[in-house]
Image 1: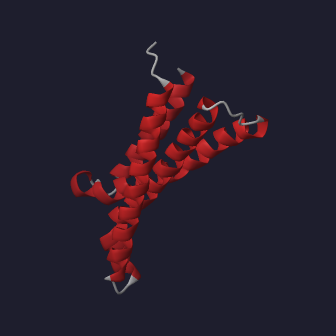
Image 2 (image 1 turned 90 degrees about the horizontal axis):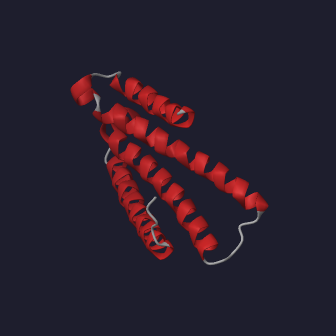
Length: 138
């Protein structure tokens, strides 16, 4: 097993948190810029679904990575999370994964029809979930 130094992990985790925060801010700004130019809900959906998906996805990635960084930071600096926090950490990771899955599925719905047809996202979503279950069972 490779032993990665704790400061290196903390540095990279913090850097990724900042990057995801900036990606979230830029995708949200782009999404709001797009919807400001549209007149109807139908136009908003048709023209901005990819930027909406990216915003949801980056939100989930930011939250999930922030949880991982914060938890490692607390533990690495000798603080104690406490018993409820250990359970809360697991719940937060699961909850933070939901917008990642939702944003990913929205992204696939927005871009896959360009090459693979309008229902290709269903197979991607099912395959993704199946791989998750398979990793637990193997």
